[in-house]
Length: 353
Ligand SMILES: [Zn+2]
Image (cartoon, rainbow, N blue to C red; front, top):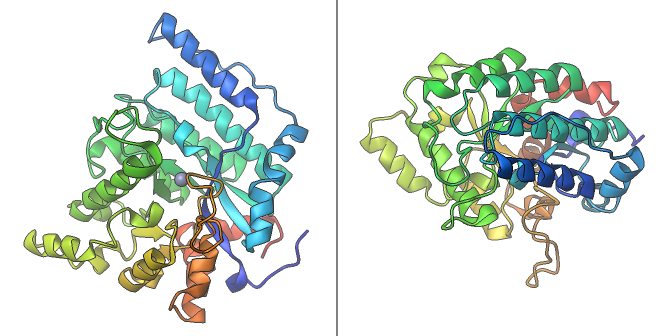
């Protein structure tokens, strides 16, 4: 048990994925894909994935846990591997069982390491399917497993953008469930199956930018859901860098001031992998709307030859940025505890508060 810190001193990483799962998880997925080759409407059964607690421990101790320790973050909101969500693969039953297994592995890790990992859910989205299965899985993860958030893909087609815009009523069942359960969503795409988009580069960042514009232009979404909170990952894609363009567009479209639009609803994480990018993010976006995150172990795993440090060691950039000590505490702790309303109760339950 780590020694207890004051709430404002906790370093909460709101964006981490289980990218180091044992091979049995990938083998399960390969079998699903093989079944789909015989029939794209193949009705899967859930089956079992045989992974021991020992294997789960081995999979994170030299990776996410080691890096938490070395870099000095306390707890990570931990969700299944984003690029493997693969909502475009197969049908609703494919996504349902795959997602249940992925979330159950996260749950087991949160039980093995309750002070290091708090669950974030994958959703069993599927192109053309309504959001009812996703709402049901979110409820299961929050009420049975103690998860505090979820990842919602704006594009379950994997790069073809066939779903409606994010303010369309298509999404309302999941927003209703999120508000009922008091959990936010990170708007996070999965792998690209479009030959023009590369998953962790242009597809992720393009989706972040696209999602922001949908939300910025949403006419009634935040009136219909006053409690709805959405996090745009990867520093908001191109949005902070082009804040002037978005402000200008908002002005031309006679929208409200962007800071007013985002204040209680739209947040940006700090998965930006160089100092200059973080400096710009914290300069442009109100501190209240920035949440600390690293997305480790994730898309970019190497060491920056210019600094000698890992690109995704984002705590360094926050430590070095121009924010005051009080503002840094907001980014590291207070903002996450506000945006994830169930977080405090979970932190208390596991002895971190
Ligand atoms: Zn991610």
